[in-house]
Length: 220
Image (tube, rainbow, N blue to C red; front, top):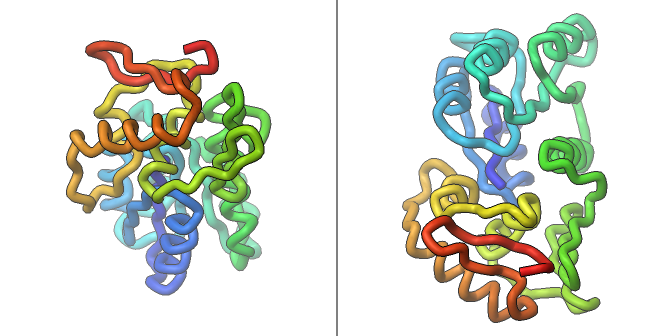
């Protein structure tokens, strides 16, 4: 899953990016509203953390432009302690949730998980597909009670497939959602990650749909 973090304060931006990466996500960052608008308008993010007090273009304007152009990714806005009017404006502009500064990183991560979960129609933090359970709170995959040992990219591939369980996911979709923007992307490595996952998962859980992509399903 891929997240855009929009924050102009360098220290907070770095802390946010590090924490979100450690939680198992691919992360892109933007430091001003113009760059944020462009990235959110051209890249397929699973969620956005958006500070409202941005240089060049404020966060409310960025969000309104995204929604006006049909961009529907979940957006969590960051507001000042006394900025109740910003919260109202943000929700009216199309935000899905808000968090008031200062905040605990654990709460931000929990809210992000909730936004991504609800966007995919999932009610629980634990995603289940047959004998496989993905605990999104702890970035942990379990099969029949045994925790799987996964690399960061294997986990991202599995998490994306689990969030889109029973759907056909193309290789290009996986590439766009498991790598950050500045990563040297190679679509052939997706096949490598899929092959590794198949060795660690019960047979048949991930199937190949010829010419279209992959499907994770307990009925595969």
